[in-house]
Length: 428
Image (cartoon, rainbow, N blue to C red; front, side):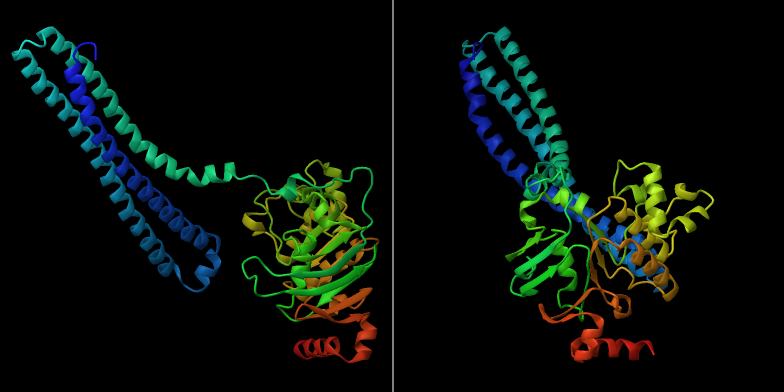
């Protein structure tokens, strides 16, 4: 401006068009970059799923099909990245053309001002040098923008998770430090449907009282809400209506981290182990536990004997998802992991249904030992494993159809009696 107001005005008039075109092109490039990144994630997911389930893939000779699916997804991603590369190149090339156009305009207008003696040769050279400095900076900025577009789209999901606030149930609620909960569980007028299927009600006015130290088994055909009860007790979901209380304290008033880490022990049908040692997998239940605590929990879970037979004993690596161990061994390690935190309440979600007879017998023996003196909720598929339960609850379409001991329900000759007979015929 100090050298030549006329040349500065000419440049300032052309800049808005450059900024407008750059903004529009930049917006489309960011959108295209996000699409390309999502497609890359999709192709990676196809590959990862095939590798994780490689035994199933091999069992059905589906290698070629998986390769074809992966190649198809990669080809789509490749086309999107080609478009993105072309767009970034067009943006950078267009920026250079506009900037060089400004330089040519400066020379043209400057030559005219020079011929009319409105500008000296020295002033024209000084203005050109200043213009070229700005030009080089803007050129570098256009190159940086290309990297920015790719980087911001690649990191968008990460930033999304980093900025996501923690669930209120994990950061709020009561933590009881001066006493342990006895384990009296009360379901009162509970109604629940999953968020993805709000029109399909799973539990309807469900009422159940589980006294401390008692074993309650919940049975029924698939889809009647058995596992949903365990999920609600673990606070994987909150009830739509009604309440669930432990020792008179509503679950929603308790801190979920405290509840899961100190009060509840959850053992699933298909336990997931991490690709580390047996010691670390058991210690996962209580990170500050000593080696002696881990060994004691393994003994309670009837796992110590088979662990000590391995060459590396507790340092044995279990492999990806526990692939180096049998089903019964994985289940006993999962039981030890749950017992390590000394929970007041044990939740067994069909803990033996996926095992063979011998493994089931060993695991059931371990469960019989560790459930004494604890409140136990058993989600049962094999009815032979819950005959000794203090209370058996039969669910049908989200409501309690029958309730009592094994002997009482057999005498009623109702729904439970029918289920037992059907399983006996299948076993026979």
